[in-house]
Image 1 (cartoon, one colour):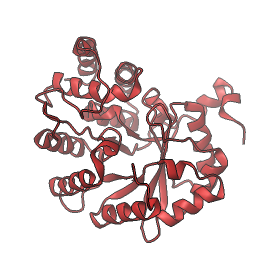
Image 2 (image 1 turned 60 degrees about the vertical axis):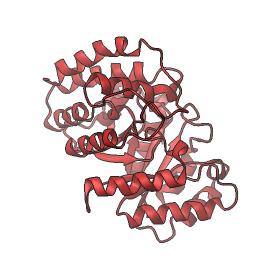
Image 3 (image 1 turned 90 degrees about the vertical axis):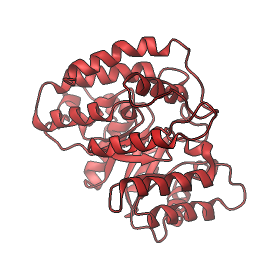
Image 4 (image 1 turned 180 degrees about the vertical axis):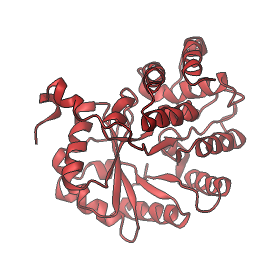
Length: 323
């Protein structure tokens, strides 16, 4: 299998897949109050808005401050989300063991069990323990974590997002495809060529497996066969859902809307990358979907002039979304 970096432009263009139905999933921002508490009313609105747009909400992800709010906080967000969306509604929830020193495997299995009991799909967050596993030991760890779980998602996370993240080798990724319970994986390297290699491997070995792009700097990966689970879509799930429909219908308005959303991604996900959540809060305040732009106290902050650079992007997206 050739490396995607070695392909010609013509070979890459030949991999474009028009008219495909995109499986859009969106990490939901967990807003906070000025006092540092969870803004439950704001979160409820964002959660409902995401589902109403036709995207699958993903909670307790990096965008939802999963690593920061602790196990009890993640349980509370999971229970609240299920009550808000109702039984049977699609929901993805992060399963992580942040800060667990004693029994990480037991903690992972407990988190997966709680998520499955809530009728949600677990996505396995990496950790120092899981990222230390390599080759066959990595696949064995996933099998042990998922014992008894009907279905789950894996997650490769670049270190620009979290220090405990790791991008797997292509051979390790192949081993994950052999695990029946893993029905998809989010890829967050911000490297389109690594993602293209995963798509080719998926197509050759397990076509039903979902490669969810987490590349907020290349959201056009949906053109090549990726689905998505993005933090950027938390800024404007309605515009993302419209873009997806344009692609399915062969509507050329896909391109300017995609470009406008990508421009937002380039600004929102600039260094330091984790501060994108502060950018999201500012954008959601600009668009009237949050009252105040507050995030978790541990989140890196953008400058006070952030709304000023986001406003032209908001107007551009609104123009191409017909708002």
